[in-house]
Length: 119
Image (cartoon, rainbow, N blue to C red; front, top):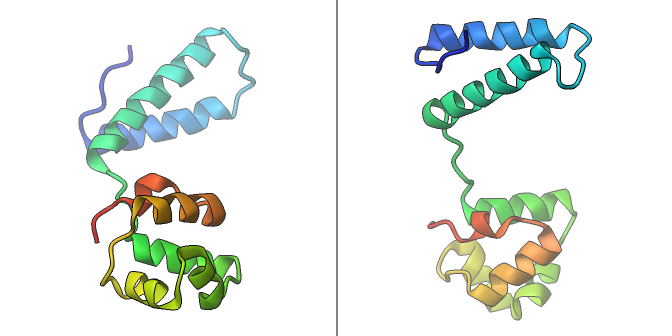
C-alpha cells in the first residue's frame, strides 16, 4: 500500500522502486502504471518540501543567457534602451522595470518569475 513519504530512507526506497518499475513494460491503465503515477506524485511532493528549488538571481540569469546566446553588452543596451541603463541594471543599481522584464523574457527566453525575484 502506498503511503506518504516522510523520511529520507522512504524517499530513497521510493526512488529505487520507481527505477524497478521503469524497467518493466508498462501498459497504460494497468496496476503498475497507476502505482508508478501515484509513487511519482508522492516523490514530487516530498521533493517540493525537502528540496525546494530557488530561482537564480535575475542579473546572473541575464548574464548567463547573454553568454549562451553570444549576445554582446551593446545588444543588451539596445534591448534595454541605453548603455547607461544596461550598466545600471547589470551592476544592480537599477531595478528591472515591467517593460524591461517583458523584453528580456521575450528575447532572452528567461521566465518572468525569475526576472521579478529580488536582488
